[in-house]
Length: 232
Image 1 (cartoon, rainbow, N blue to C red):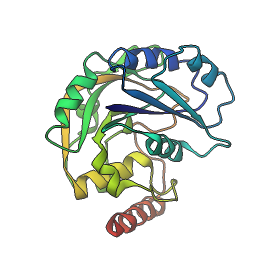
Image 2: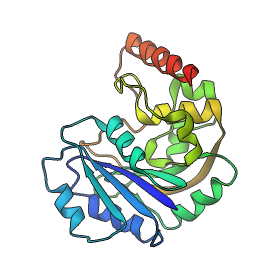
Image 3: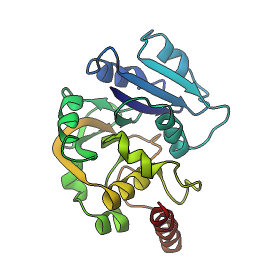
């Protein structure tokens, strides 16, 4: 069984395009867990109009932030294989099939992405090449280029990953999953782009671009994450 964990917040503009690209790749017993972080637009109503039993919606009573929102979705997942999914991208054909194959050799896999603008115009044909994505704990501890929207993992990862560290400002969910996988397990890189990774002014994450955090903030983030990592 496959679970797609999708965190939403004011995502009505792109969400149906994204969901249609996912649903066509899932079997009848798979599921999409949507954790909505108290959206102020019509995101939830738009999703409900699809009337697909594979979609299960959970609404937060108040905004929790995007990392906790993803943790909420992951906690609701029933699948043996879990995909992380943003609300505004588009999955390419065969993503599920290719990633399931990659997960036969490693508990967590990261695939490449086409970087596009809000209208899906191509900006760069390889996230991996643009940001020099490579495996390795120390490389990704110091400056990871893994992005959650390109992650899939086997459920066993959650034995170490859950619960996420409480301070999400010091440890974002995808950075945490990266560290857990690189330190305790094994990571497989899939060089083929499998999503159109949409970059626009409302994105919640930096998408691998240069961080605006101060040096002290960067040090604090790494020390905080390392402390919690070694406790697992």
